[in-house]
Length: 230
Picture 1 (cartoon, one colour):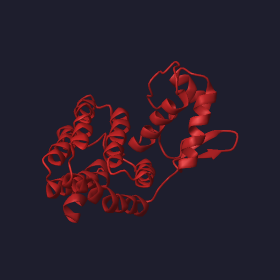
Picture 2 (cartoon, one colour):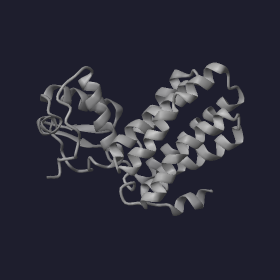
Picture 3 (cartoon, rainbow, N blue to C red):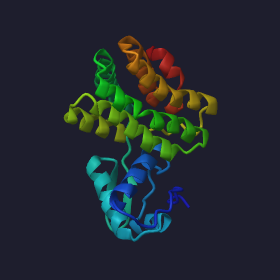
């Protein structure tokens, strides 16, 4: 069925609304929730193994973020974005994320070093999730990793803006690209941390730029665009 998206069975636990929202957000970004399909809260709730209420609440949260829209008396569907809109989102991310993260390399204090080193498990787990072809898990952890980096710049407004931009990205080509290429892309998370800890601002700029360009290049099924944009 079109409205079956292969989501994990949660069953219960604290922060259920947030857990469901995180999985659904990642499913939208990864392309598991398809455009044009109406997803009902009861159907999704059955897949999660929970009642419809937290699913409906989570979907309303995603609607507020602009990821889905309500379909009266039916459910929700994914908001479609044009190629131009997706290109613009990636362009803004390049302008905001690259200099902010690269700037961290210019002043690596003991506390910053500790916080960066604490992100290595997530960076390595991203590679493992890629090997397992768990794209929804990858998207969720990738979001956590990059927003955690930005939080080190102590600008919460920037974190919120980039978080919204990342949520509106679409990585629908990830499932179809060469698996080794995808793994190499995931390994860039470790390289970003390595270069930050080495104080290599120029190196961080290069890796971060390449990494974000995957969103509208290889991860969108268009690797040639990364070459075009340099």
